[in-house]
Length: 259
Image (cartoon, rainbow, N blue to C red; front, side, top):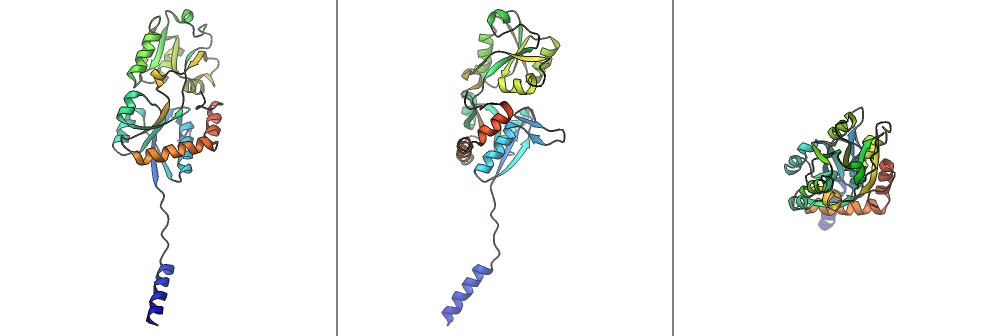
């Protein structure tokens, strides 16, 4: 009888105990809010863009919460190192220098670079039409990338570096440079697509490992194997189930991993 009472009491304790809610892990992601089409804010201040949607898709794939923070590019690495965020998902090139300093997952984009010129420009991407002109580029975190541009275009052009690509495009519009060389996706979405009277793309897109690395990936603190493993699983899942392709085509009309 005593044994029966003890068993009943144990069963009651288990059945009557309050249920503990499952607590999802949270991935803290940082991205620049001024980097359309990859990450930008709507008129009402909400963060959106390709990287924003990809981040949410990644979190859904591995069933974790997404805490996405708008962080200016200049403060991104310090935010990562301080633990304010766990990952930067914002088209960071997987360069040799960056791979030595951080853990990276990817690539999730295989980027091409292209020229942006004024709508009425006769520049077609050939050396003959570029010789003697001024080329605007964004300062790269990759020494090899900067060197490639200077050694390639600098032979017959003046190369002017800018802190932000938008500054280079403003000088293009003002006639202070004749062409801008940068990520084709960004140039198309942010400038050429909606401003055909001002800008157009010229020449062919170039996939340049020296400039962009082997692709663009997610940046984590060095040695962060936990999120590295989960993000790789998540990336594989959204590529396989078509979610990546759906988001990519929404913003660019093509799959950014199939270049």
